[in-house]
Length: 331
Image (cartoon, rainbow, N blue to C red; front, side, top):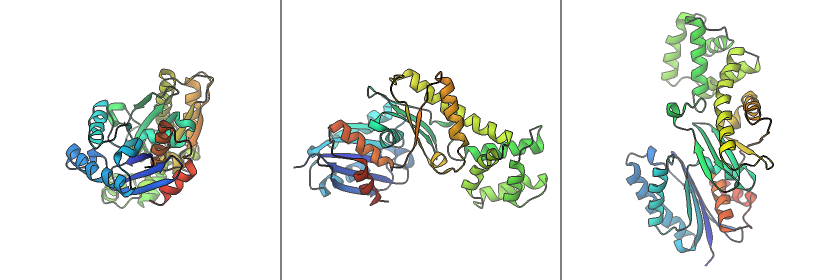
């Protein structure tokens, strides 16, 4: 039987599973629903039930048994603590998987975007997260728990902060900002008295484009608006300080590259790159002039799971182009 590796990216709405053999050939690719216990009504019990149905089926359809899986990497949303990692790992081991890595899906961005699966991944999409794998193979994740970790980025944070700054100009002693006129135009109003009423009606009524709202501070910053620039720098400071701290605490020697993958819709799709530049400057300053190399993630996260599993299993024939091709069949 061919020995295989398995890569799994499990999210709150959809999941991808990909098998490769030692010759670098795809042995199976499957799309599935949620594999995040926090998004399930039945929590851990429901996740265990789904894994118990899904994983044996995926292996069986590849024409092999679980004993033929040389290594498997599971990157699942909702694996945020050591206790969660241990509990979900036990579910997978009960199914016969022996050599596994169970981690938060943020780590997949490191493996998918950084050379040799070493570096960091900063996520700025639905959420805020930093994950790192150092030159000794240590894996650490930080941030990602909202107010508990003082995250300032991800999801709707930029739009909400922009709205708050506009409100401060209108009803406090806030600084003038071009974002006010941007929101007036977006809402179709001309008086401050209409701001909250129309905003609330449209926002909670699902009549506002979330992407457009979140883009307001970026577009204003591109015009040199001081309030918007400070807003983006507030976010940049949180990302940069988390990246710098991991670089200091983990094994990232100064003579070796410090690679950082930027993932998530804000980093990947936002045309205004001021936030990227602010993060870069702050990281360099915090590390005494050391420069990091940044990569925009151009591979689906499950590709990182496959490449990491391939590295652990010694499957040198598995390469990123083949993995991307296999994953694209699922998208």
